[in-house]
Image 1 (cartoon, rainbow, N blue to C red):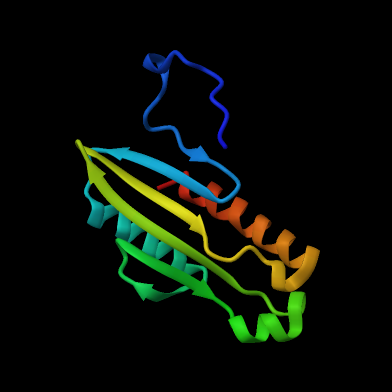
Image 2: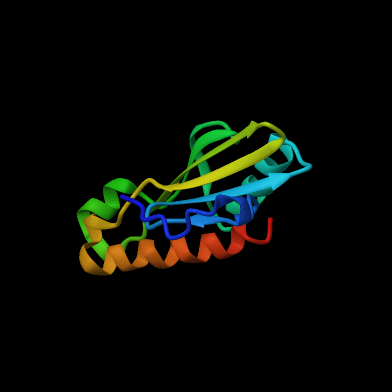
Length: 127
């Protein structure tokens, strides 16, 4: 459950990112889905990620082996993120979801995923 701290929504910046523990939502004006998808794709591929499912507009990016992560835990890094990019009313929205939580790597694995999520959130702010 998300807590609303300000009921006065007329003062909300619609372009400010909304970040929770499992997802980050970014809004852009004056651009297209394809332009944002291209920037997101370039950001992920630069960091060694590949598209494992779907497309650049709605897909899953991953890095590392799921099987090896299960077998060897925190000794093997595995990250997976779901990305959706949509346009509604002239506002393009890009959402980054945590696909993996890091539980297979124990407390160290969870920390690794959280640190990578924080790094990606900061990188996406420059889009």
